[in-house]
Structure formats: C-alpha cells, structure tokens
Length: 281
Image (cartoon, rainbow, N blue to C red; front, side, top):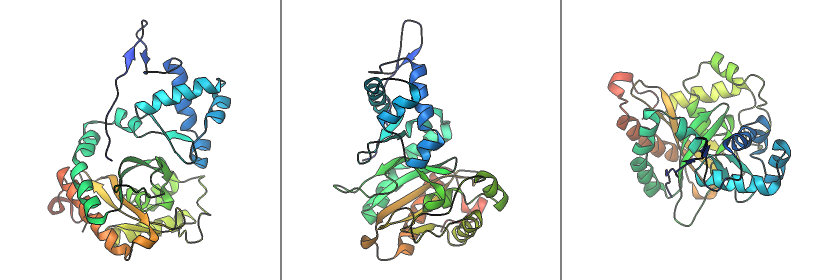
C-alpha cells in the first residue's frame, strides 16, 4: 500500500502546535522524537515505551498515548514484531522542499510498475546520516518482506545505502562514517570497513545498480538503483527486497530496478544526454 497522507494539526489557546490525541505539549513530544533520533535508537532499531519513559522521565501511559498520536501523523512508526518505535518518514516530508515532494508524487507510477513486474516489495529510500530511511513502501498483496520494512536501517548493509552513497568520494565516505563500527553483521556481509564500502560503491557506478545477498538479514536479498534530479545528483534510491528463495537472478532484479529508477529520474528532469549515463542503464 502506498501512503503519503498528512493528518491535521491544531493550535491551542497560546498558539502552540498540538497533535490530535497527544497527552502533552509539543516540547514533550519533541523530547520523544529526539530520543528516537539518538545513536542508541539507531543502534538497536528503535526504542520501546518503557525505555522512552525512562529517557524522558514520563509515565509509560503518557508516552504510549503520545506515541500513538505521533504515529497517526507519520512522525513515528512502530515495528509490529519488536514493538519498538522509530522516526517516521513524515519528518522527512515535513522538512522537504518542493523537489522532494515532487519526487514523492512522481514515484507512484514507476513503483507501481515495478511492483507489477516483480511482485516483490518496492521501497523509495533516502540517506539519513549513516542510515537509510524508507519513505514509501509498496507491498505485494498479502505479503510483506523483511528488512527495509523498518523505517531506518544501516546504509552500509543495504543496496539502497550503497546507491545513495554512490556520489561520495572516498574522502567523503571516510568523513561520514568516522567513528561508525562497520564490522560484523551476517556471515555474508561484504562491507567490514570504509575501504570495503568504497569498493562496493565503485561496483555500483560500474553496473548502475547495487545488490545484497543476505547482508542485512538472513534469507533477504535486494537490489537498488539511484534516483537523480535534474542536476544529476542522487536524491533517493528505488529498492526491491525479497526472500532469497523467490529470486533466481539478483542481476535481473538489479536491471529491472535500474530501469524503474531511470523512469523516475527522467520525470524529475534528469537527462542522460545532459548528464551522461550516471550509472543508470
């Protein structure tokens, strides 16, 4: 299901912004959002109500009600399995300029087409520090894939992250990931250092898409390709994630994703004639 709706906010008597159903003022809700944007939350994949109550010094019932209100407007998202909350895609939309909002509107058609072609989960993602944030997801009817269904995941472990970083120089990569532990992950995780990440990005530039084979989670594979704006800058990634037993050829998945990303890029003003192939085939 594709969702980009924004619920209404309101003003209290003092003129402060309030959220429907929220148990406290905006300042206390911002405290929750700051906690969910913290290194701890990113490291463990979100925070539960109990931990958020500890951090903010609020009652669990108050935190729970506030989170439900924030979720209704897309500012937070709750993982149904872990029951942890994470930053939601709507924060991106609220701070986005006209270019980003135009991208969200234009993404609908190529994402629909890719879903129809592959019958696998399709995601539109952006870079969020050293992580990848999923803005919009299209799921096949009756099925959900693991992995990028979470709003925020590590960029170096995903094909989307490697695509989103494909404009970075080696120096820029080193600066962005300074102090970030890249080692570990699944047994098949190829990126264990910034040097490994730089090598993967060179591969992305050469073939026009990125693939991962059980690097984020066991039994999960994926492919991604860059979405570019009229200046040729990478502004997003189209990603397809699927169970490994459903994908016969990862490169075929990558090429299909790259074609859809090219379609979206062209609708945003990118032109191969003006900017070169830019890794899109």
